[in-house]
Length: 383
Image (cartoon, rainbow, N blue to C red; front, side):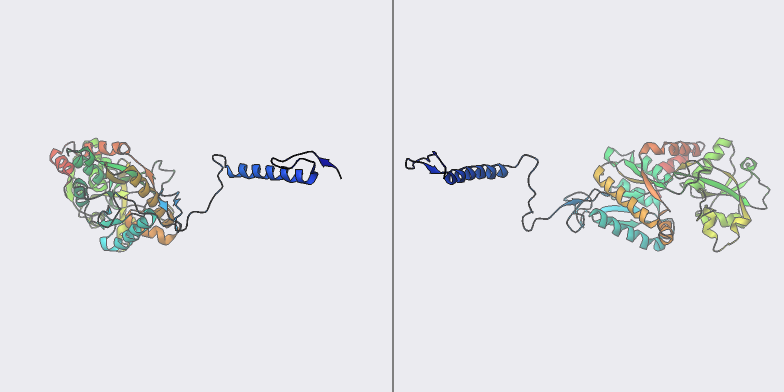
């Protein structure tokens, strides 16, 4: 049998069997391989299970919130919504009756809490003036406003010394639009209605002796928009103040006023007659046959969702994503779409800034061009 003359340190002199030499080589190579495997290249570390009791963290791709292994958002460490004593305060003024809207608002608040991990305090107020006062007093973090009440809040808060008190729009409501009316998904206007048998055929027939039913001086579609239209036409009709769209429509039907101004949105498959007259169909089924539209005002942007300037941008993003998801889910069913009527019938939201509402501010200046006292009252942001 052949041998190799290999000597190990400290061994006796003489030939070593070949199999002993092979064993030594295998041991040396094995040790080197083990050492190489023990040195993990940077960026290629072998995944190891987390220590027992450690929580695995995920991120919600829709809201941006961190989630635990059960998909529950982790509560924020500080800021609005971090505790019951420091909730995220959201204010609503419903399109429908407050009591009727309360269940919808509660479901929305519960959804926001589940999706963001924040403690949310949702309150429904019956008057936009109250919401504006809470914005001014920093008692509100997020508010759903009409276009006109947004403008009032802008005027009111910009008079404060602290720029952090200023309010900013960060979302705008999207509704179903129609290609026949470009931009109708992001804007609305007022319609001027008369009885079907009225001699008034168009807006140009309105004169200084025409009795027009307008709403509160702080209402967009029922007062500010038609007032701006009358300023452009150079006419000042007689005005009869009637608070509430159903009452304006009823006043036209009963002949109390000759013309009434009501909100109007683009018709769609579910609402082929999409204006304030639908609010009285139950009590006056023939309202659309008994009245007609003689003209329209200018368009103004749909309602914004606003917050104080000081509200952290990440909180705004979380609320924006959660609101969009909530509305998207409800629009999938007929029952859900009916529920959205209580919060203004949106089909979604888009990001917005104060600059998106500059056309609104111009219309307001037109509306009060001949009424400085009305303008002062409007800008004060009071009830």
